[in-house]
Amino acid sequence: MEVAIFGIMIPIVGIIGIVVMVIYLRRYENEERMAMIDKGLDPAHFAKKPRTTSGALRASLLLIGAGVGLLLGYFLDAKFYMEEVGYFSMLLILGGAGLGAAYLIEEKKIRREAENDRRTL
Image 1 (cartoon, rainbow, N blue to C red):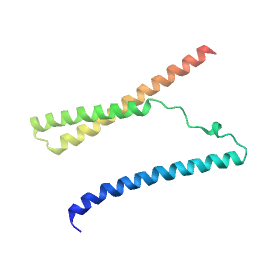
Image 2 (cartoon, rainbow, N blue to C red; image 1 turned 45 degrees about the horizontal axis):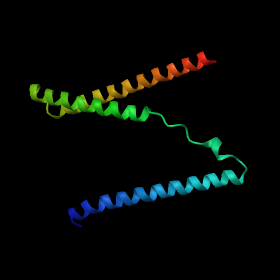
Image 3 (cartoon, rainbow, N blue to C red; image 1 turned 180 degrees about the vertical axis):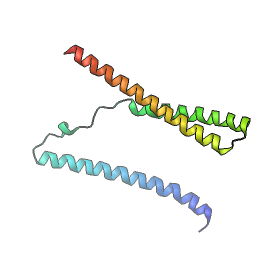
Image 4 (cartoon, rainbow, N blue to C red; image 1 turned 120 degrees about the vertical axis):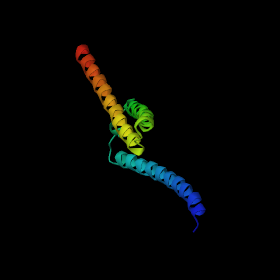
């Protein structure tokens, strides 16, 4: 096969795979709920946790850190001729710093909520 055919087939197979995965996940989730109802359990007790903003916070700070890392990598490359080393090192260091900042923000938020819960009791 030619390379062009692979270039066309990979996205098609990927999209079909994602659609099939979503369909099967929904199907098995429905079967699980039906089994709970058959056994007399209430599916509401096993509901998913409420959505939080922690995923968006992590992703945003990771991407901000990666962007700043690429910018600093460019400056290192221009000033010290570091080529790929500057880009990858700054990307990983500042991406990790972004995830660390997200962790600290989440922990501070959890502590604040726990403190507010204690005050209301």
